[in-house]
Length: 403
Ligand SMILES: Cc1cc2nc3c(=O)[nH]c(=O)nc-3n(C[C@H](O)[C@H](O)[C@H](O)COP(=O)(O)OP(=O)(O)OC[C@H]3O[C@@H](n4cnc5c(N)ncnc54)[C@H](O)[C@@H]3O)c2cc1C
Image 1 (tube, protein in one colour):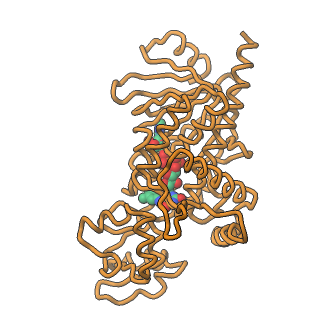
Image 2 (tube, helix red, strand yellow):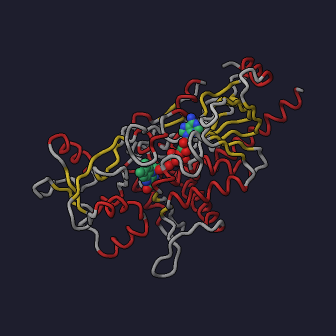
Image 3 (cartoon, helix red, strand yellow):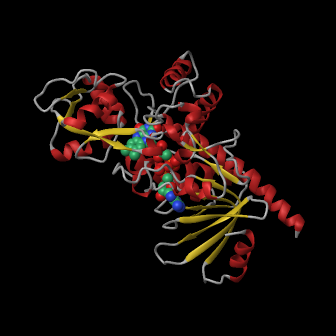
C-alpha cells in the first residue's frame, strides 16, 4: 500500500477499522519489543506495541526463559567471554558491539533488580543474574511497558508496513484476531521485534515465530544479513519442546545399546549427533555434571526439568532419547541488517531488535543461543526504542511544520 492509499484508509476508515497514532510503533512483545517500548516511552515518545499473541506469554522467551550473557566488568571476565564466542563465530563478530551489549546488559539487569525481578540467591547470598525465567521476566516486562505509558494491542498481528512518498516507514496495518477488525497505525518510526523464524521447529514458544517481521521489512526494501548462518539446530529430548542446549555440555551421548558415541560431546559434537541420528536413535545422559552443577542447573533453568519430572526420568542417571530441531533465525544469527548503533535498518524510519535483527555483530557465524540472544534482545531492544523515539519525534515535528 502506498502513502496515498494509507492516507485514504486513515482518513476514510473505509473498512471500518480502528486507527491509531503513535510516535513509535513496536511490532512484537517479546523481550526485545518490551525493552524497546520502555526505552522509547522513557524518551517521551507515544508508544504503541502490537503483538500477534499476548505480550507477556508469546514468543520464545516467555515460556522457556533464557541463560543471559551477564558478565562483570572487573578483571578479565569480559575479555574471556568475548574471545570464546569470537573464535567460535569464525572471528566475524565485532568487539565494539560485544562490549556495548555486555555493558547494556549489565545496566538493564540493574534495572530489573530495581523493578523487583526475583533473581535467585547463591550460597554466599549473592544474586545470580545469569538467567531469566521466562514467565516471571515477561510478566514483569508487560507491567513495565504499561507503567511506562505504552499502549498494548494483544492478539493483533501486523500484516504490512506502510511507507510515505519518500520511502520512509510511517506505520503499519494489522488485524485484531479476536474481533476480526482491521486496524491502521500511523507512526513516526517502527521497531521490528517480531523474533526469528522457527515455527516448524516445534520448539517451545516458536509457534508464533513465522518470520513476518523480516518479510514485511524486506517488502519495503530492508536488507538482511547473516542469513547463511541461520541453519542452527537446537538439541533437546525427543519427547519435549525444550531445546536448551547448554546443559548438554555435561552430557555423554550413547547408542541404544549403551555405547558412548565418540566425539558427540565435543565442541563439534552437534555434527556427530546429526550424522548418527541419520542411522539410529541417539541417547543422552547428563552424567558428567557433579552434585554442585546439578544443583545449579535446577536453580538456573527449572523448566529444563519439567518434561523429565513429568516422565519420571532422572536425566543425570538415565539415558533419554534426544533430537535436533531446526531453529532457523531463533538459534541462528541472521536477520535484518543494522546500519548504526541505534539499530536502524537500511530503510528510514525502520529499526530492528532481538531475533528479528542480525546477531552476527556479537556472534559472528555461530549460534546466538545459550546467553547471547537474551543479552542482545534486551540491549538491541533498548537501543532501537531510543533510536525510533528520536526519529519519531523529528518526524512529528516535520509534519507539524508542514501542516
Ligand atoms: C526453547 C528455547 C530456549 C532458549 N534458550 C535461550 C537461552 O538460554 N539463552 C539465550 O540467549 N537465548 C535462548 N533462546 C533464544 C531466545 O529465546 C530468543 O533469542 C529471544 O526470545 C528473542 O527475543 P525477541 O523479543 O526477539 O523474540 P521473541 O521472544 O520470540 O518474541 C517475538 C514476539 O513477536 C510477536 N510477533 C511475531 N510476529 C508478529 C506480527 N506479525 N505482529 C505482531 N507480533 C508479532 C510474537 O508473538 C512474539 O511475542 C531460546 C529459544 C528457545 C526456543
